[in-house]
Image (cartoon, rainbow, N blue to C red):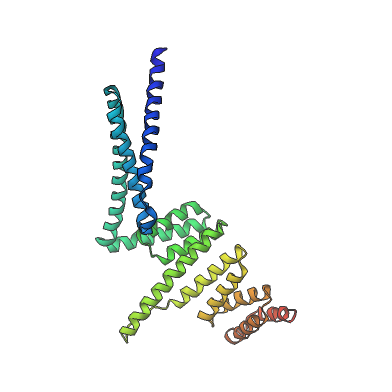
Length: 284
């Protein structure tokens, strides 16, 4: 019976010691003004402060407790440090693996990315959305600026009815595309005969995807604005005009519908939906 009580008493004494030391040291830590540091350093500083607190508590406890308790604290500290070291090692190995793949073997990296994208698209078609998501995320871990992976991920979130994530993913994809467009445009101006890839079509298409995501979360104003952007970028694309007309009718934007319908008649006069749109426009 006595042997059962001794461990409980030891644990209680240890906890009491930690609480006492914590309240003595908290006033010292509170004097450090974290808010004055740059935001990007705050997380690291807070982490360092917490680690220092733990180390100080362990040192103080080691001085105050009897020699019989020292092996217990040494054991706990050793295993804590060992576990932390293993986690850091795994993270570093994973990081170096991808850096090596990209820098030392770029062709292999591109092939791996292509395989992952194809696997992800196949899984998405088979409605295996969780596994498809893993493939696209793995692509992004190798190439953080991969437009195709982000776009596929956004469409996958739409299928999952995770509309907020879809919206945010498409917004990020759009930023990457616009950044890419400006880069190529700047290069084209420096080199008169330099070939500049057509990114307009991709940007226009992402605006359609983004408009669909906004529509799903009932942000109709932003949905309409996205469809307008798509039509402005590619005014000769019947699909863009179709989406804009539909949204304009829903939102009762007669002038927008009239202009988009006139453009549709020019670029695709045989479009079967023109008569339907005209009839709906007359009722507005």
